[in-house]
Structure formats: structure tokens, C-alpha cells
Length: 100
Image (cartoon, rainbow, N blue to C red):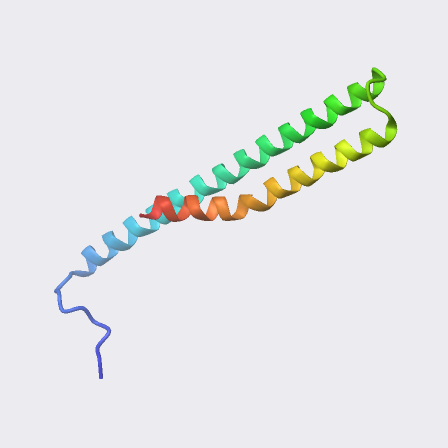
């Protein structure tokens, strides 16, 4: 039967230090990934708000009609939702890169 123990002799202190280092790496990667996700969300929301605002101004100024406004806002919403769906995988990739 194979043993779970390593063949190298380590002290409990060395094992605790290694555990503390790995824990710190994971926490730093997690905070960094969360920041990346929040920043991506903020950028996506800002872009969406600007696009919808521009479309509303075009409608107010008479440059577009109501149907065109709806189509353009729906298109901007579609783009926004696609951007939001990429955030979890982007954050996960960021987390994994930080751990390496």
C-alpha cells in the first residue's frame, strides 16, 4: 500500500510555513481576480450606459425614430450581456495565472 507521506523529512514548522505561503498566494490571487471581475463589470456598465445615453440623445434630437431606438438599444443590450458572460471565465483565468 502506498503511503501518503513524503520521503523528504520536513518539520511541522516547515509544513506550517509552506501552508501559510500557499494560503497567502490563494488569497492574493482571489482578491486580484475579484478586482479584475469588478473592474470588467464597471467598464461594461459604463460602455452600456454611454451607448444607451447616446441613442436616447439621437432620439431626442430627432436623428432616429422610435423603432430605430429600440433596435439600437436591444443591440447594445446584447453586446453588454455578452461582455458580462465573459467575466467569470476572465476572472478564473486571472486567478489561475496569479497562482502560477
